Amino acid sequence: MTNTQLLSWIKQHLGPHIQKAIAITKCNYTEDWLAAMARREYGHKIMEFTNRGMKPEDIHQITRGDYGQRPGETEKQYHGFGYWQIDIHSYPDFIKTGNWKDPLKCCIKAIEVLNEKRDFIQRKTPGIAGTLLEDAVTAAYNTGQGNVVKSIQAGRSVDSTTFNKDYAKSVRKYRAEYKALK
Image (cartoon, rainbow, N blue to C red; front, top):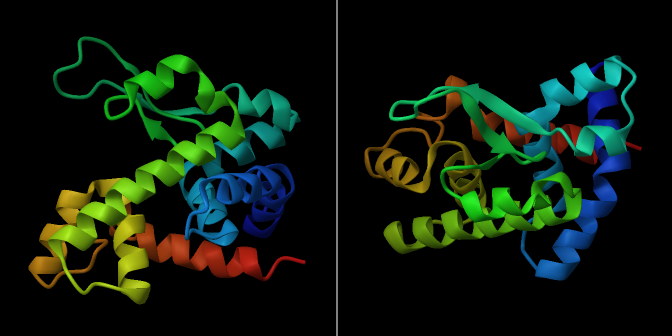
């Protein structure tokens, strides 16, 4: 599966849920933004499962990732849930509901998480706007808003503490590719 095919899969199988989540929450996030984040968060597993011939409704039920043992944990466990990989330590109540298996409910939760990040970043870095704000919020989804604010204050890239140091950059790339889909 190519990246274009993966983004087409996301558009077909998650796009309607994303559009509905945007309408319900009346948020400022766009379909391409949320789709690109799902691509970055869980795209590798979507590819793996679709290559095995799994149906979307079956994939929805098993969208867990980041399996391992973090410091302070007594055993290995999944840390991210749903296409947007909602973190079990930050949002345990949401994970316990099982709503991460529903793409619409998971997308709504991802929007809530993004809003938390945006509010914090805007409070701590007054005047931030435009592409920098979008990239900061996106990077914060991966590395935490405190890390992003520290990076901005130190004059570093918002991606300087993200996984592979390219989270917002890659999401922006996927956004452009998603927009170009027919």
